[in-house]
Structures are given as structure tokens and as C-alpha cells.
Length: 226
Image 1 (cartoon, rainbow, N blue to C red):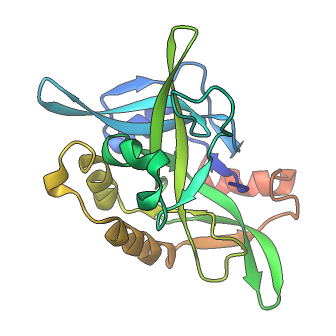
Image 2: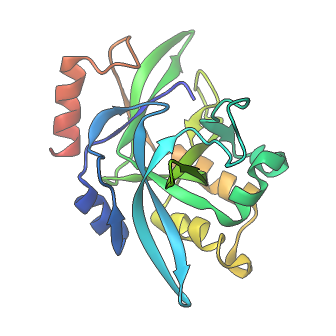
């Protein structure tokens, strides 16, 4: 995935937003620029002793299966319309779903015949992007690796917009990994995400889309209420 995203809230604020009971975010901090291979945070649902618990945990952006010894490059994103037909994601899609919290993301959008870089955000303080994860053991330590699910958007330069969900649909996305009876078809999640994306807001930023210039950073501070 070529884009990057901003998440300026602290782990405590994110946990409160989702009602996550546990935060395992040592070594992570807020940033206006999270890109591929960076340490990010995800919300996942655990089923322990018959109880569902939300946890906020650190992860590496770039999914790499446990069996991968280097021959497969990390997967940063996959289209929500294709993930169900890709065997690499079968187990993760069925049982290892997560949400990637973000305040907004950077994307190219067309304005007439010209494509321009913009910062895209919603009206809620945090957007919930659909994700899947795998767990790798490195030097005896379990590490989550994550891929974002993406979709096409009208006027977008690429199809790699994060597929974001409303709070209610985000909960359904997580619940479907532990209870198939409440799961929705991928096509339904895709349709709901596309409908939400229609209402997202954006504004023009500097041409260096992968580096927020100072004037854009200041605007983000005001926008996010930091």
C-alpha cells in the first residue's frame, strides 16, 4: 500500500474509544505519518473463558505468514473484493480479523483531469479500517503482522483506500471471527464501507504525500484537537 495514515491519539484514548479492556502497546507512540513496515496498533477480539474481550496491541504493518522464511514479501494491503479468493488469507479472514485505528489517511484524488494529494478523514475522531493479521514468532516473541483491506473509491487515483467501517459494523467485523452465526458476507462489508467512504471529508495537502509538510502538520493538529 502506497499511502500512509495519521493517528495522533494516545493508546489510552484509543482504548477508551473502543472500550478495549487491555492495552499491549509498549514501544508505540502517536504519529502523523504511519507507513508500511512501521509499528502500528490494532484492535482485536479475544475469546477467553467464554468471554469476548477487546484488546489494543502493537503490530507490524505488512502481513507475513508464520511459515514465510523470506521468499514472500510482506503484504501491506489487499482489495476487500479479492481477499476471499486468496488462499494466503483464508485462515486470517476466518479467525484473525482486526481493526486498524486511524484519524485519517493520505491519498491521491482526481480534481478534473488533475490528481492531487489530499488528507482524508471522517467526522468521528477515529476511523476503523478493516484488517487481517497473522502471528509470527521471532526470537521467542509473538509478533502480529497486519494487512489492510482496501477498496476502490470514486475519484481516487488508486484502489488502495482503507476500507473503513462505522462503529457498529466494525464490531460486526470482529465478531464474525469468533461467531460465524453473526458474520456478514464480504460483499456486504464492502458495500457498507463504500457507503461510509462517500461521506468522508478531505483537504489538499503538500505534493509530498508521504511526508506531511509543516503547514499541513499544523493543520492536522487543529483538526484532531491535539
